[in-house]
Image 1 (cartoon, rainbow, N blue to C red):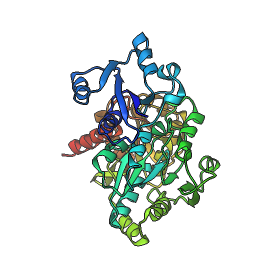
Image 2 (image 1 turned 90 degrees about the vertical axis):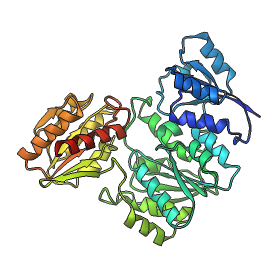
Image 3 (image 1 turned 45 degrees about the vertical axis):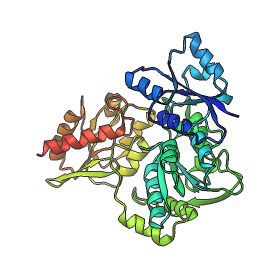
Image 4 (image 1 turned 45 degrees about the horizontal axis):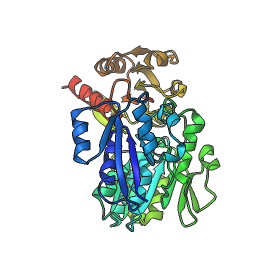
Length: 416
């Protein structure tokens, strides 16, 4: 039966979904697509007009908003919407679906396989490595999801793909009702995004949804060293495990081997991928090496666990950390005994410095942070300066990418 879709929030993911819904690729048909957004711009109005989508302002206090909700049969909240949003009080939970569900439905008309990866840390790198290994094997694989290409965009633009390797965030998994990947992996779990999820249990439940619709013919891969992952193991399907490596480089290597092998890559292709793989931008990215000091951009480290994993193996580090804090666990990074100085940034900067015994300073912007880090590096005879925030970028920046790009620009400008 054709459905009436209501998209809440018109960011990149729901815009891609809107195009997919209007493409005719949905097997059950689409009767109508409606959209709601808090910010009404001419560009958004034009986008919706071009696709024949009805656009409404997101004022939940208006009676018209409730009428929209009542009239929709499927509601897709934008990823990242808070559990406390009024929409969840106005509509039945049965109406909420994920963008992953709709894109998955569209793939069922093809022979493409779906590989999905979730986890608090490391999922982007694992997804890219698995994709590269499959491509090396001669398999047409596309990485998508919680990166620059939403799953729905990949389905629409890559109809000949053999495999979609999907990075599945907790936000995307929160409402899944149909998403059933052929191979699904949960890498790890630690507290995160608690400003969006109601509590830690809600975050865990969202992550566990990657295995919610697994069938006997599907495969799952679990971290044998993570107790939260293990207790949520599915009772169906064929399961296997990986063991985390000791270093940040090797942490998820065995996961990549396990996933890529199940998806059709040979051991030779996987080994070749590791040998030729370049680190992704904003993930332990070397920006410059000047006067014996390496400047490293690890802006993607948005959790304390990611900071600990990346920085713990380094020597004499000046750490730039802080941002919009999602969890008090950010204070855990004071455990790093190789940090010779801390430059704190963002909303939680002043709180963060209280937990460090080494020299600290709070910077008001990235330029000031880089200048302070240079001074600390000289005084403390540091080997490295690293931006590894351990927190979200959404206090000063639109994304961790923008944060990392500004750090790189300031570093390069400092030494030109």
